Image (tube, rainbow, N blue to C red; front, side, top):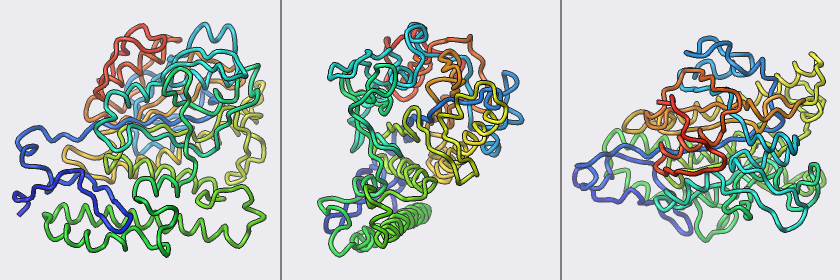
Length: 437
């Protein structure tokens, strides 16, 4: 039955104003593709967390196979075989001499170019690694890239030692003078992925699945047994996320004063906000809507407290611990909490089956900060890890120790090779980082 199907993989489930992109299904691959390689594409995401780490609680004790993970990484213990920790990578040595603050480090995180010190319109950084990839492979997908976050961007003000707040609140740069704004509203991302010409909520706020139900039934009858199950699981996941977003919107309506200034789709529960944005990453990759995503959990020098884990101190304040064991312990607890969110994403990606394994197997999820120890704003040993195997091009489950100060740009060049966007020059790179595969 499935051999007779000639449905392009970009086929979508349609209804009035709705276009639900499909995951990669074996039954609907064109006959031409069946005779060739059907390996799924490699996706890449860059997740930024603010304020550095307490490095002794972050770094594995020895180079080589990851056995017992260090305290901050312990939530990833079930996934240690899918994680590659890389130590010793750094930003520009010139940057360490002229600035040690958040703006000039966050501005370098994905560009590996020291940004220009300015508060005006003459911004200058560099093209970020995600946009180098988007320019090379973005034509294969609906969206060349997606830029996501949990805290809005800023476009004016002095956030750090004469550096514009633009540098502190953006990691994606389309050109050296054009930062890309990030979307912080899960509803807006959801609608962008699944709605067409409906606007927020659509007519009578009907579920996108209700609108496209008949189209889904027709396709379901034409699929093989395995793909029927995959489609059912996918549509169920969409509906669950849609209900959670609707619940957020309902929760905010009775309390307009409490939610003043908050967009309707943004949860008051910050953990739920992060989880919903991670859900959007998984759905965007699953449907091949994009292969390149950036996600800022918080802006540089984020100083929010964490009452959800019993910490009332500001995160940025704690990062300037001045050697206080008590503050270092709290800082480690915050960063361990962030790891529970990365664990959530890895579980999502590993639950999606693809022809050669899972969505996690076919992804490179880089998680990191723009400096190591927050008290010193150390730029020479960044906390960097990669989850996923890049379609089998990365050997995970290890800790690689590079010479301290090895350019982070060398890793990015290696990652660009693996996603099909090789380049001979990027930022301050001195070559490609070896030993990943």
